[in-house]
Image 1 (cartoon, one colour):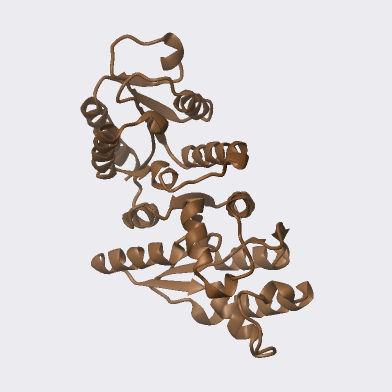
Image 2 (cartoon, helix red, strand yellow):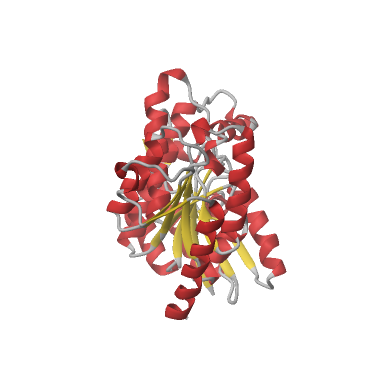
Length: 335
């Protein structure tokens, strides 16, 4: 039995991702058991109040919610888990309610559940805030309760911080997974000791032809490693003019987390452009003990550019060859 603790804010697309994941696991003869904690909580709550639903549960007193959650989480542990399966418990750890964070359940109750559930690791499914808003706005029960782009962004950031904290408390790894990531990303994290690579390129300045070239390279990287690609989220992002600073800060923190959960950073410059983001990420990765490989389009470069870099390559193919060597050596050392 393998247990995974999954979180994500409303509308993050976790249902779609787990459907893809379950279909992929079928091809690998692996059984998946996805448990939506909210469904179990509502089942318990309706035994005492038939009017409760997922859109009004936060209107009830905290003491009442604690009772419902405790009973539901105990039920998950005692009745819902399946042996010889990948059990994924999906739960909202935080809520954004009336323009601010809301304690949905006592943290001690949550953490006791995490300890008993003993997940292999924690994950958070994320998506672009514009796509999330579209999903949330389609829910008829949300009419009259406007969840703004700013609120979604703050909620997503809050969820990341709290989930990461719970993972650290429980001495578990935490992975941020974009809804757009391939289904085999989670499978590989569970079953394979794969090299994990954060892949970055100057997104802001990339033309369509360059993006296609980059996507082809990422496909090749994916064959030998788990690739965390910020572009899987970034191409769906949308920010209001008044929240530009908030949005850009969130992007930086998100990318830092993707670097934290990786072994290598591959920085690809298809052409020479000024990209403070890529240079900053390379320096952050180096100062965090990560190995940085740089793909640079010219044999002339500044010493400041390559200072945090372990090795410079002048074509994606050369970098790929080197990474294949790393993967082979890693297998010899660890398997």
